[in-house]
Length: 219
Image (cartoon, rainbow, N blue to C red; front, side, top):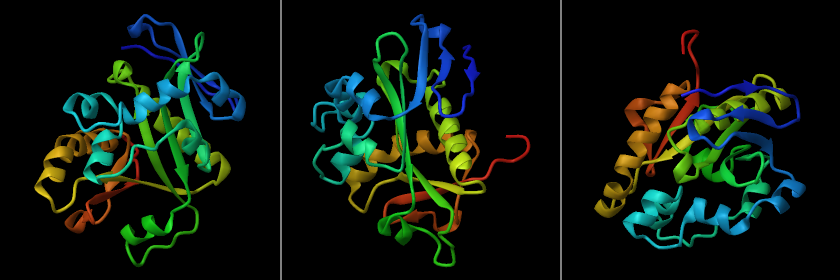
């Protein structure tokens, strides 16, 4: 696998993805202009699929498993991403085909319920909505999105502490079986990116595991 990251302030990051044979893709802040160039239906399929809880849809889309586990409505769209404080999108440089996304924001009241009670929320950001379209997975796109988001957050709020949540399931056996493999894979991936479980002995909070970005000098 070979990709090259070139960092620019407030400009798209260009990434050569030779292994895919599709040329170059970019990671950019989601703007109104970029939103208009992306295919809304394409983004919706990557995020939620066809709205069903079929195994094929759960495997191919990013958030169908979580939506089905919560028995919720598949309402994630490009507009919901743009409402976040920070939103990055990966897309093919020549066709604007959607490849993936990630967002970040200050902790919501819901997030604060899952954080340690002694924790200060000043300069805390929560990463969420990490998604990579199925055909582009296992190519380093997720790592590029996370790295770019961490850089963006530190540029906007130097010294900010970054967290994320992994849904492990609730009390129902169906939910746990639905999310178990996905949660294990996500936690392994996030640990490779420098995240660690907060309060590992009580890591499962209302079905979620809290992870903090705390890279070691050798990670």
